[in-house]
Image 1 (cartoon, rainbow, N blue to C red):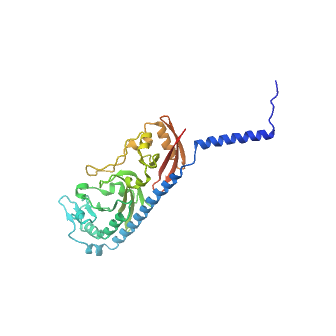
Image 2: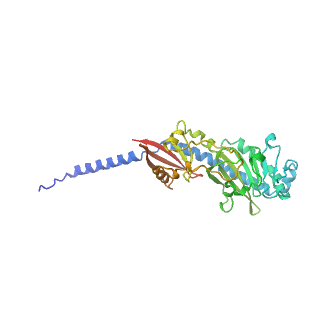
Image 3: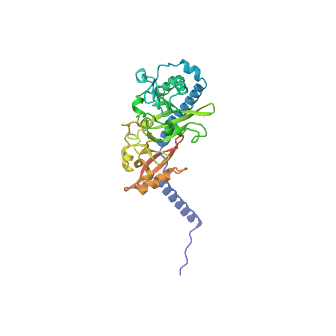
Length: 342
């Protein structure tokens, strides 16, 4: 048998270098650099939600101050501004006509003089609620919910029609997520999973903050952002058709028509209540990638939502995609950029 001929040292080195270069090129093809637009859009989102969070923190502090001066502020309020109905609800009848915040006390806790004192005293925050909506493009609603199921909200709407009598506000996510059991740190928190707004403004998320006074939780204030307004400037149906915003539970928050077709999703239409609100209402499981009928999509969702994920691959319907991941602070959402691969 003929002995193998060894290569000279210099040629062996060149072969090794060539192999390394080919391997690196292959890895580069599998994981190309993320598009610069991914970082641009990610920072834009973080800036918007961060500003709303700070506004919510300031509103909580403002309301806390009201509880320290209840008697004086209640005395200064208009005693005839509210009507107690036969069904036990209390409301401000001229809210829409006057353009002032609407008021609704559901009656699940009977209206007492102490509750009426809080209702009157919190008129002091009406200018704050109005200013937060009118001066901030992102904010569509500002409100305060007292633990007695008293709601003060701007802009005003027909609360008597929209809200059911006996509504127990502390049972709703926009209240209980900020209570002591769910939020021991007493910081502003986000209702991060898109839900249908009880006031009829469609899919939204909320930043809510507890209001503590006298050593106890008196209520929760909140600022609402509609999904439509939050993502309007991201232009998913225009310049950025292959981007997708994903909540931490796998729910698709927003995307364009192109990705709806790629991922076999139903249309992401807005939602408005036809009837009054009855309970928390979240996006259908049809919009949750963890529950997709496609194994490839479910596996991709698990990969991009991993804590340190930066990229993933998807092979679906004879198309291949490289996916880049940008985590969105405050919300712990993921902004995904889908790049076609050959």
